[in-house]
Figure (cartoon, rainbow, N blue to C red):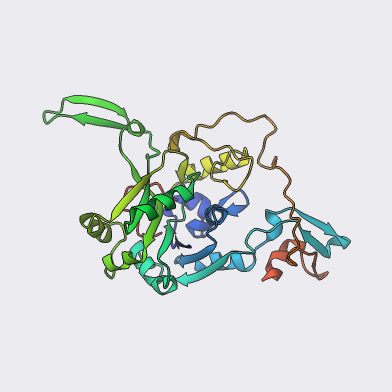
Length: 327
């Protein structure tokens, strides 16, 4: 199943962290949030990606064209750095389509721009590229396929510290409680569509506005309610929170790690059980590739070539439903 990822955002509220790079390239640890998201989908077997590029598309292209496998994989260096043996690989079985969808396009326009790349796809996934989750994706897909509807989005509880107020016409307060204790849910940025979605879209329209209204009237839009971990990276504070989880080895979205601790609590609370004092992010079980596919044999690196460049030689979102148009 193909995965469409909207990568055109400027990340204006992330200027402290993003500077002049596109929002999907803002790093968590030593990899951009886009990589974490793609790794999530790949873990569940969805490795055919379509990246809808916009602002600083060149930065995203260069990251993958010069991909450094040694940054996140075990390897053996020998012969004075001229020989590198990778013990496992990240993206060798990924297929990535890089599509220029315009700098100022909204989400609907970006999706329409890659319509030709989705020919023959009965169902496809889509994502805003700025949110991470520990959600069990196969359960979402199974429910969607059984329901027979055209569109599905994941709804989550908002990660907000505000209090909701219920009052009467005279201003008398009837109730006040934290937003996260109410029934309010917001668009989590994880979508599933059948190809008929394009029948409900018109040129220039924002995806979750007019098209979704038509789907609602036709009873063809459903939502999957996820109450586990979900976190978007909208602000510098959000990035700091994700960085902290990652650095402590408590990143629930890393479902591909056997030792990951997944929270079953409310998404915005990030309430996880305590870890041992020495359980940092690098405290993971050793992963070794014992197969023989001819692809992980020792890689010969020319003396003038930096081992860190060996990858080059191998050539998220919790937001109210009306989303920003710059993703």
